[in-house]
Image (cartoon, rainbow, N blue to C red; front, side, top):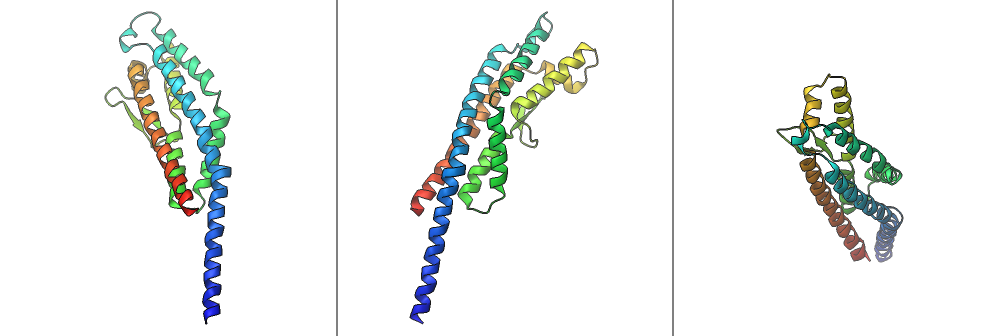
Amino acid sequence: MMSSLISVLDRLIQLKEYRTRRLRHIYSELLKPVFDELAVVHGDYVKMFTEVHQKAPFPWERNIPGYQDKLKEVVLFLQQRRVELEPARIRIRVMVKELSSLDINSEVHSFVNSVIDYLFTTITFSQENQKLDESSYKSVSETILDRLEKAIQEEEVGKLTDDSLDALEIDIRELIGSVLSYQRDSWEEVCKAFSELKINIALKG
């Protein structure tokens, strides 16, 4: 009886030790690299959108010659800059997608979900309601580029839709300011989830 109980306890201890080793391995080989790479991506996002904010025209400039050229400059800048860390973003997206399907623990899932929220936050173009929209799986830069490119093309051929007119007349500088603020808040959530994950692993010690 006693030997059976000891045997059960030994197996439970071994199982706990295995789970702790597995969690530490997942952390060091997968989670920490994701966090470190996302930190670089975030720094690039902040720099990129700060520069876009400086380059973007004011809405009152729309009736002034050169307004569309400034928009095109913003589009070209985004097209060039966003590809620089595209491989890193793709690696992170693939990794968190795979991690999200694993049954590990709540702290890991919280971290993975915070990364997903950070990467797949997009914006809604609306003059009345300039807000962030998390219902779509496009990045911020992708959304801005898509809408501005379409609007510029339609304006050039004289076939602007109401949707594209919103994209042209919106205060892009204000919108980018909101994007920067939201990205910083999202990064803070990633850092919080990562810290909780590290504490959890340390306590399992």
